[in-house]
Length: 77
Image (cartoon, rainbow, N blue to C red):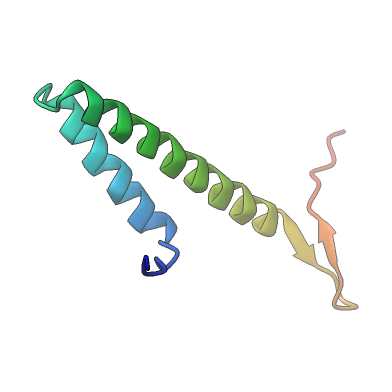
């Protein structure tokens, strides 16, 4: 039975991604392992992208006086 992994934070995922990239940059990883690490890095990058998009969406909302959230828009003249 496989233990359930906790969800890593954005920062933990970035560190994991950096570690994988450093391992691949050495050129000393066997091809099969390199392919697996590349696939893992792609999945980690996708998770990071999703977390970053969610954070961006949250930051782009403003709280109105009545307590509702509204998209933040810059009105250009």
